Image 1 (cartoon, rainbow, N blue to C red):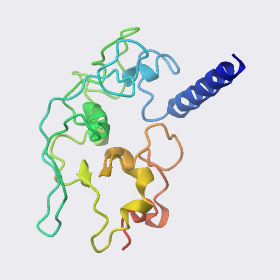
Image 2: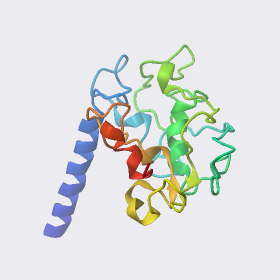
Image 3: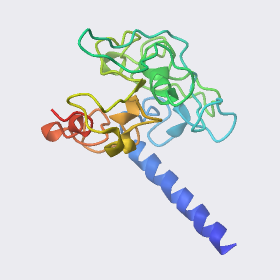
Image 4: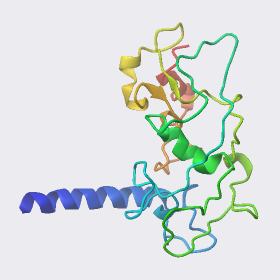
Length: 201
């Protein structure tokens, strides 16, 4: 019983830390309609009636087809043009808001008719937050990181930023990180520190 209480306390503490990191950040979509601190997590997560993807996903996934990065001088290993729900679901979760095809308020379980802020008349993210469906000019995502090419670090040294050996949006971005890294980066990119995790140029 004592062990269960300790585990429960740790889980609750971790949840409160994640919520605190979102409060007043770029991902605090409650501002503007429901007030700061009201239903912050609901735009992405729900404890009940979640979508069939993890982590307790609440937002409608996009059904868009994406144009992925490609270069005549770069060979990408296993760079599919669609997200099949496997390890690559991480980027699909991000794009469900950031590709501009699904309204931010399009969620499976809505507690208080939350609408969110920084949206156009259709409830879609505008400005720099909308990357669209043409990802050809963005860093490759949803690709297997080979780590054997010239200019790349060995994959075994960067497993903490890979998802099933793939590069995803979360390889560079940490949505629960409200630090001063800008663009919700996983680490500050001072001296290209973020880039040199994978690239050894």
